[in-house]
Image (cartoon, rainbow, N blue to C red):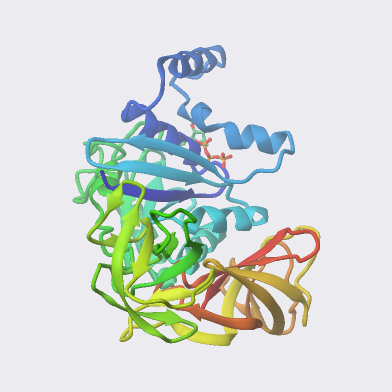
Length: 414
Ligand SMILES: Nc1nc2c(ncn2[C@@H]2O[C@H](COP(=O)(O)OP(=O)(O)OP(=O)(O)O)[C@@H](O)[C@H]2O)c(=O)[nH]1
């Protein structure tokens, strides 16, 4: 069954927890005992309704206790698709969490309170979604019950959002008027919005086309491990294990080995349950070649007529993750890129982006926790990379502090 990963974003009290709770409740993902406990708590508090936000209060509880919050993942399924929601807190101080949650998502639900309309947070969350290569944004205009289901109000918000989003790089944006509290247009279409012709939110999540989100065009296979069994039966075997980053590999395909540039043909593709006729992302396989070529961890298989960029001067957008240290101009870091690790030195900080207004700041170049900046790095060895736009795997890097081993930044190659 196809899997859709999505992330949810909204500012405080926009109704994110209620919406996630509603999706899980209406798709019967919650267990009886959870339901009993929510009913009890809602009744004790004298709420006239079931408070579905109680279901997803994990993050809030952690926050109140001052525990480090990362990303909470929740799972549910319908007969059409499986879903993984990455739920991250919405404040600016959690930008890095949102970056983490968004980095693997197909879709982002951006919640807008119908009374408040498009606000600073809406823009920030949308910008991060776009930066992280999310191809589908669903703007859920929530609390429509509090604006009398006004079509005019909905249209105003759509116009304001489109105006702002023209500066982003998101191919598909959908707008849905909902009430998370009452369930309107969440799972089924609502009688309160006869003017709305589109699908319910769940139907949209079940059917949005994500077949082309994965790169099946550019074959890239970063080698993680060279397998050379020391047994008599297998003494001729020399396989290259790894995970297909993108594209398709088949026995008989011509491949180019990077960095050496030698060509060979794929002999076979092995997996733990036998040989297979093709491998594509995210398959983990062992590839054998038809001739002896020296290869090691960090090398890459591509195609003779379709090769990644090779270079040591890398231009990227980074999000800074470290609370303890700021980015050091001329600083040295460990860089991890696919299965490769090398050193990198910061050559240049071009500008910092104000995530709320999208303005570029060229004067203030101190890059600290949650900041997003454009930088150039010089690596100690050539990287085989694509732009993040083209390839989320071969286009992303992580920077690690050499001494503390802390992950200090995530980067998207331009
Ligand atoms: N009238 C109305 N109230 C809603 C709707 N959705 C959520 N609410 C209410 O809005 C308040 C905030 O909802 P939450 O789901 O807790 O909001 P949140 O965005 O998760 O809030 P944080 O976790 O603090 O970021 C609660 O009192 C909800 O009952 C809606 O569609 N209509």
